[in-house]
Image (cartoon, rainbow, N blue to C red; front, side):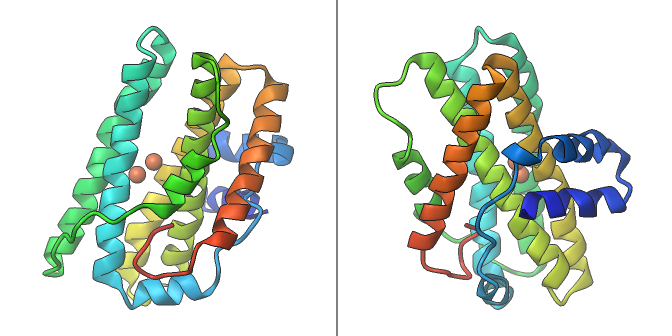
Length: 223
Ligand SMILES: [Fe+2]
Ligand SMILES: [Fe+2]
């Protein structure tokens, strides 16, 4: 279970702010864990397509910010959702700026935004005819899913890239996205019965596994 391993790693590095996250991870083994590990070829492909992967990463961060804005716009009456996500918008935009700054330092250009097959396929898996509240649950689950997978990929980059500066750069993202994963799960647990969240999450883990089997491994995509 990759996420569990990730949480153990984070614990070992004694990041006190992640203590809660790590502790909960141990308690919630049954609802956590990406089913399929990333294909080992991905890290090598990403390492040789740095400008491409940073461009895609930059747009992923923008999309993470806009997704949080869209949740706030869609559920303004849920004050705790607004309170939780408002700072994440700022953080994700900050991530975009960090990636862009790293690109400029290297003389890279911000390429065009690419079609996000991973996210589009996830969206296609959302069941039809949902109530407004049910839609919120699935949006939170998709948010948690993308954060969890991003986290796993950032870990691979933070451990395997040749340049120490880039490994440290990606370690920061891994820690941050782990926290976002936890936040989406916590919001879901707060607004929906635990049993429903667990069963819905299990289904999303299976959905994501199917999607990864469908996608071609390429080094110019974060997902
Ligand atoms: Fe981010
Ligand atoms: Fe995030």
